[in-house]
Image 1 (tube, helix red, strand yellow):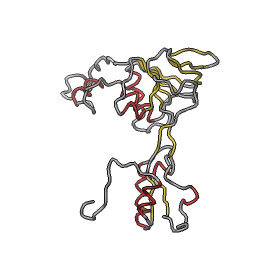
Image 2: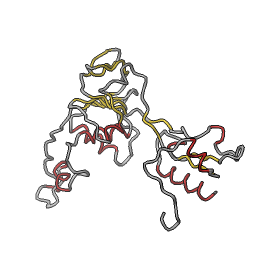
Image 3: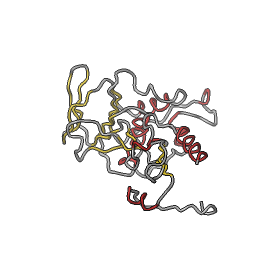
Image 4: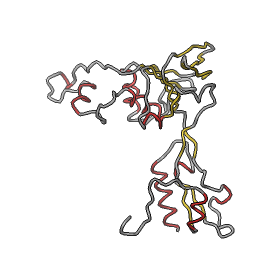
Length: 243
């Protein structure tokens, strides 16, 4: 960046006025996504967090409901099974104990009894779709995530309708039966929407209009569903090569 004299501006919120003042020929919108907030009564309550809030260190209670069982829901649930201050990733010896691996091969097949987990939280992982949770996870690693949550007592429920959020917790319905999950915190991992506030929709991929810049949208800002780092990198490289 320094060698090519790139003007890097940190801690700067970009708006239309700033872009206009820059008199740019081209603007690449790579602003990513914002977490989706489903339409549930009480979704704006103080006991509701997005996954971004959690990863940024927001306090999370002992009993937690995670709405959404895609890749983010599984990752956040696993993150919440770690105590504050525990190193991540898990140190090798702790990982070997967790999975019952005996590198010294003192046990038959190099397998020993795995350590007994002591999860710091009670977690419910929920999805609207009926059926097994985690079907969209990686073919070679999905079973690891499911096994980790299962051995730590995470309750994984499919076919869930979300009825209400209150100080009591989360009211759900399954198979026609309503029940309250009396949880301290609800974490929303229900997908994401593209963040395109800086992009005039009519200008996408079009020629320069009235002397203004050409706009290009890439990555999550272009397509939020099933975020794909390879696709985002390719789109960025293709736009850069075309300029």
